[in-house]
Image (cartoon, rainbow, N blue to C red; front, side, top):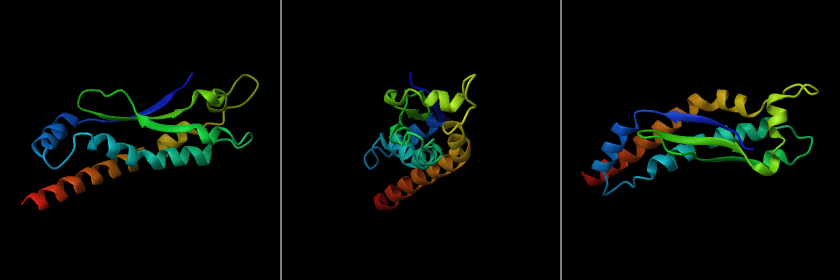
Length: 133
């Protein structure tokens, strides 16, 4: 079973309308690409925090576009099913204390992810409007 910490950026309807107005110069998939790029430091932080006892877990921390909600760019921080035991590290068991790595990575990097996302979109829009003008 895989679990995710999701970061949802709202206000996408307005953004999508503006991007559609720029459709000739900017691909609509830009929002997803920008979010994946902006969230990669979150994935990297989870890799850094992942327990190293097996050396296997960090290799299976993934970042991918989650099911899109209307008007939102959504990215998921996930762990491959091959590393199913991640949950026991993250949540702990009655025999083992929790050693979270997904949630701390999310909490540490979420604000920076939103900032990087906005900066990337703003730069792309500026680049297109300057070249179109």
